[in-house]
Length: 424
Ligand code: 0X9
Ligand code: ZN
Image (cartoon, rainbow, N blue to C red; front, side, top):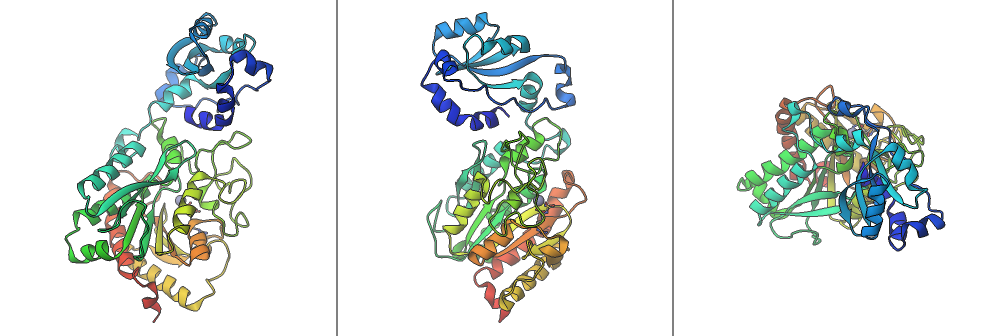
């Protein structure tokens, strides 16, 4: 959460960096917004009665630091222009009056919870953000002829949205004329299984790169896999060591609630149906279409690649294979496109035992990835709702969901050279 506050405060910090604490006070800069209330977590419950905060305070030199020690701050980290450490609540409340600029503050229980940052032990096999990054880097390093890694952009909290590219000729962000396929996971933080399925797909394609069919795809297609498109939300979901059913990203809204639903933030009939304008809601569509760095990164990536033919966004759970429209209660109007969508969904549905259906037959919800990718670029875009009856189906589900979705992904690769061949 500290990172969130720092991001929020960045403009303030830039201004503040140029002046001393008293200057800032004279200019009337407000104290930062209070952080969220402490999260209740058994792992940090021993800190419930501890009234200390972890704070970051402007401090230009050793004289400022000495004064802060005197004011009750236990200085733990020193950076250029500021220090961080622990301070009791009573002393914190005096800091502004003493001329100090408090840049961020976090109750000690939240600070401690933020340091746990991982899956519960039973799900340790799931990949958190740094493990996902490490795995993608390892795959790219072990397969320099076929794979490369780049970032689609940075998240609200400054994490990278990593994307593995599988292509035996072009590497990194260099454009290509080959038909392209884009697999994505984890738009929703709590849907960790989707990251695993996307990672398993990447592993499978590279482990079997000598297989004739896969070798052909690596030589003729441009394959992009971004397993963790909402890493902030996924980390937020696990950072207390216990799941907290967090769906959205971690932008701090005007009312201090956390997050925008990335799968309601795309610019296709944005926020007209199945989305909320109430910031605390799990389906909050954001203040405007593409307000979020995560969706903007995906938008810019897609718009810069007219060679994209197909897209698969993994979600969980319900065992469904969904296609447009999601945001209006209608079929896509182009008969040929409809036939391609239906044929692909039926085939992938058969391979996964997921039910193929128009997304709006589940519920009408506008602003999702698939509707936007199809309306903006004519991409045959699908949403797979993976197996299970919970967002947290346990370690054993990874293998099961991955095996069937790899089969469906291989089908998608097999038709992505020319999707319209399915309508002839
Ligand atoms: O609501 C969503 O964003 C997706 N389901 S989830 O449980 N993973 O959140 C479904 C998106 C497909 N769109 C529609 N069914 N309208
Ligand atoms: Zn989802």
